[in-house]
Every structure is written in C-alpha cells, then in structure tokens.
Length: 267
Image (cartoon, rainbow, N blue to C red; front, side, top):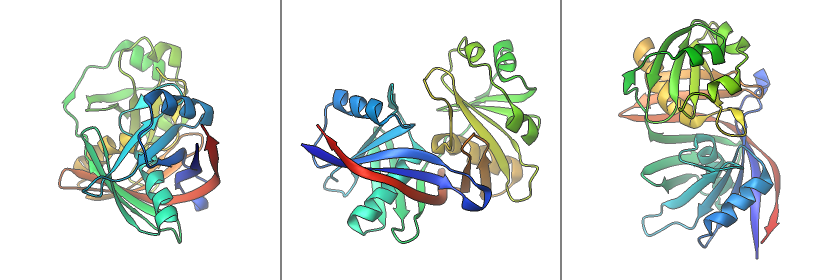
C-alpha cells in the first residue's frame, strides 16, 4: 500500500523572505491506525504531518495532525496546507475539516497558492500572574500574561524584545503550561502585531508560523487596536506573514503557499 504526500509551506511572504511553516500532507480514503500516523510523522520529521480522510455525507473531511513526537489538537498551518493540497488534487477550492470539536473551513487557489482558513476564535479567559520562571525563561520584561483555551499569551514591552528574545527552554520547562504566544504591537507600519510561539515541552521548541496561536492573538489585538482586519508577522527563524480577520467569534487567516516536494510513502 502506498500513500501520496506533499510538503507544503504556508504563510510565506517572498518580499520579506518569510519562509513560512511546512506541513507534510497525506490523503487516505480509509482510516489509519494512530500508531501508523505517528510513525509516518516521525519519519517525515516536519513541524506537522496532516492526515486528510475522505469526506462524510456532509462533505466534511476528518483531519488529524501529528508532530514527530505527539498528536496536535489544533494546527492552523496544517489546515492551510490541507486546503492547498486538496485544491491541487481535486481542482475545487472550498473545503471543510473536522478534528474533534473543531470545524475548520477553508479555500485555496491551485493557480497561485493563496488560501484562507477560518476557525473558532480562542479568546482570553483570564489574566494570570507572571511566574518568575516565565520572566527568567524569556529573558524579557512581561507586561501581561493571559490564559486562553490553547497557548498562553505573553504581552512583551516591544516588538524589538520579541525579535531579540533568547528563550531558556530548560527554565520554561519547569512550568506546566505547554506553550506561549509572545507578542507585541508592531513598530513597522506594515504590520499590526508581531509574535513568536514557544513550545518548550516538545522537540520543536519554537514553531515557525502558527495558526493556532493566531486564533488567540487576532481577537486579543482586534480588541486592543479596535480593528477587525489586521496583518501580523511571526518573528521565528523562518518567519511567517498573516492577513487576519476577527468576525463573529471566528478568526480567518489568509496567506500564500508553496509546494516544495511530492512523493509516495510505502506502508
């Protein structure tokens, strides 16, 4: 048995050199054992491997995402890559995915690699104290620390602090929470806000262009800046660029993509 795959980088931006985030994408008509999917993700060794399955009666594709070392509950860049993959494969341009309680809608163009995905926003649930280990692990001044249904938002003093931050992951691992979206208002008028996503308890440590973080960051900054439409830059080593919209409890993220490899996996 063989499965076709593609490696797709999303949230790229050629003018600024942002390389975006890569997901391997695999389509299967039939369900696959969890151990098989985790093994494939380990072999692919990408930030995420996205498994898309044949749609049900409602036309919704079941989807699951795996990092090399564990399953991912919500993966925005994997969802975007799935849209691009299906646009290339099927010629259609509008898709729906379901993972657990998450329903993701998306569209993509096979012609130019543009895409847009939409999913439930992750609003701040409460402001929380700033542990000493968080400040020490980030090495920057923290203006605010906020809980969401996914990663915690950490508000930094400046975009420069976010850019120059040198995290001490061994210190951050002393905290229980699995991830942090460190953010600040942009100093560049091209963008509304910047961020970096840190995941100290998994092998990757820092994610490149993170859709799930922006599910929380977009409503956070939309409220602060009084804007529905925003642009964002992720200041990771690869870099990411997002066109964002907060609307009706949902977040939409648009961007550009590039298919960088295709092939087959023999099971």
